[in-house]
Amino acid sequence: MDDQDKKKKKKDESHVHEELKGFELKVNPFGQIESNYDMDKINEFLNERVDDKKLREHDESDEEE
Image (tube, rainbow, N blue to C red; front, side, top):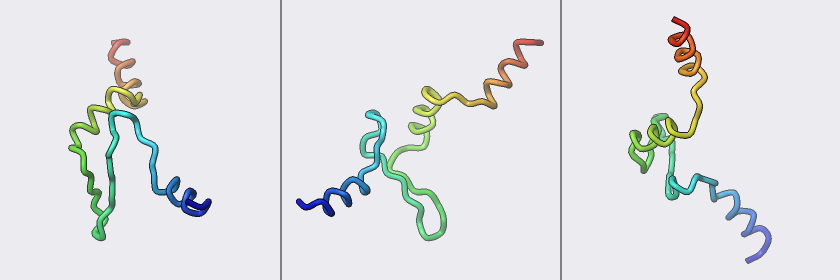
């Protein structure tokens, strides 16, 4: 395998979290997002790991009342 093949392979491989191995996301010709993972599974993963600033501010205002 030459250097050009290695560079192309690196570009084709995306880095994903261990729990999302095999995850693929594509946009079809109509602009619709297509995925091989269930959207509920993706949302659950994001809810567990990503801090949502809007929700955090909402929670803080609830605590003040």
